[in-house]
Length: 194
Image (cartoon, rainbow, N blue to C red):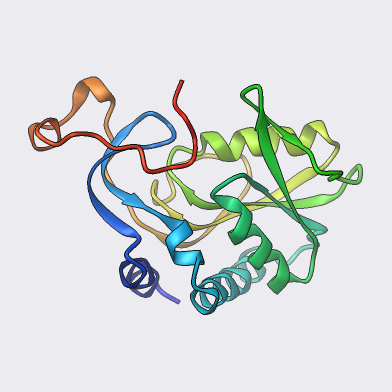
């Protein structure tokens, strides 16, 4: 599956939004990718995650024991990716602003983990999730996402396998271009800004 096909899946799902958006990082962008809308269609989610699993195996043929994703955006993508890789899927949740495992989840010490997100922009949430994995004794050996909005610029310290790279501008709130200054900002994601 190539970049244009992935972006078409987002368009077909009504998930490639244009306007003025506040990203989880606090940055502003004229484009928002609402992966929850993409994953609400099981057939579409299966197509995308099957293609991502194939790409992960090409880039990282080594052993993966489990997939761990940050809630909320990565939960369904991580589950579906884990299904195609034939390994268990866990997710982290924010407790007092920090990712933790809950719901009886545990990571065996030394487990080789694939950290999975829906969309990576700056890599901040990915790194926080990887820190959580390390805190529980796991070793992140590779990361994956449906869309890498940094198009390869986010440095996670492990290979990042993206089904599609899609460089979209993002801006500090006090450095908006004139066209975004004219549009009210909306926060469509799941994470509250502090």
